[in-house]
Image (cartoon, rainbow, N blue to C red; front, side):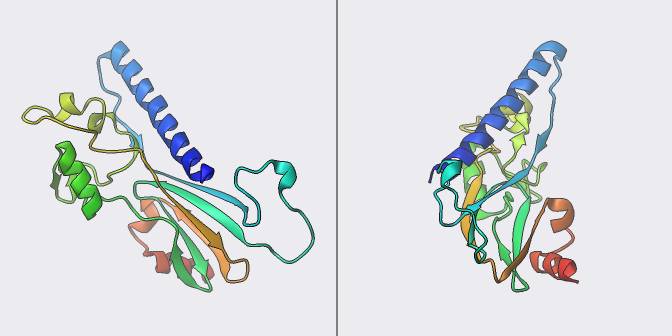
Length: 193
C-alpha cells in the first residue's frame, strides 16, 4: 500500500528534521537540546477508491453512507480507538519498552530495560526526537557499552482498517495523559455518556 509507505516516510522525514535541529542547536550552544514527542496520525479515505487515486476519481453523491478506510500511524503511547457499537476497537497499540518485540529490539541495540523504562529513564520505545537515544546515545549512555542501533525508533506502526458507517460511532485519539487514567473501553464509555 502506498499510503502505508507514505505515512512511514513522513514520520521518518519529521524525525530527521527534528534531529537536524537538535544537532544544529548543539553545534551552536554545545548543549544538547533534549526533547521528543509521541505521535498518532489518522488518515481517512473512501473504501471504494484507491488511496493513491486522483481527487477526480473519488465518488460523490447523496446515496447511503459508504464505508471508510482509515490508516493510523503511531509512535509511542498515543492511541486511536473507535467505538464500534459501544465496544472499544483499537486502531493502534502503545509502544512500551516492556513489550517483548520492543524489549528485544532495544536490548539488541545495546540498551537495557529498568523500572519499565529504556535505560531506566524513558517509558516509550518509539518517538520523534529524543536525540540522546539516537544520534547522541554513545555520548549520553556509552560510558560502558557499545550501541549497535538507536534505542528509540521513529518507525511507526501503521494499521489500516475499514470503518463501518453503521456500527462505528466515533473515534477517540489521545496521548498518555488520557490513557494513563482511562482504559480504551472506559474512554468509550465516558464519551458515550
